[in-house]
Image (cartoon, helix red, strand yellow):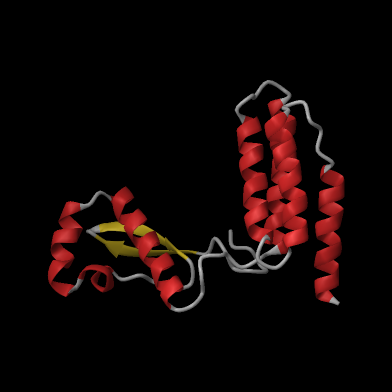
Length: 160
């Protein structure tokens, strides 16, 4: 489901290499733009779908960079909030007999940092401190309520 604020995770399906593939984002990345019209049939026959997805994503990033958009993702407080709260849930699950969920919780905190770093570096640093605390000590108890309320305050400030 797409984020209502930033539109991330919008999914569009198109056909390539005779199979359905998914492209994320606002722009389609046509294969012929990557490899030239003459080579398109070779590409379609040669690559697995996983590799094809990687190539399409790399091409999108390079196109964004060439257009001056840089490599840093746009900040989205709603997406950061979802990642922080998901991390809280996963960390709780890790303590209830699902030890691998600890790693998933760390991953969501890293994603929350990425969502914040461009426009809200102070919040990104707060999330980073929590993540590093968890990395150093699995028994560390993050103050998720403080993170959530801080992000929510920024969301409300942004609305005003």
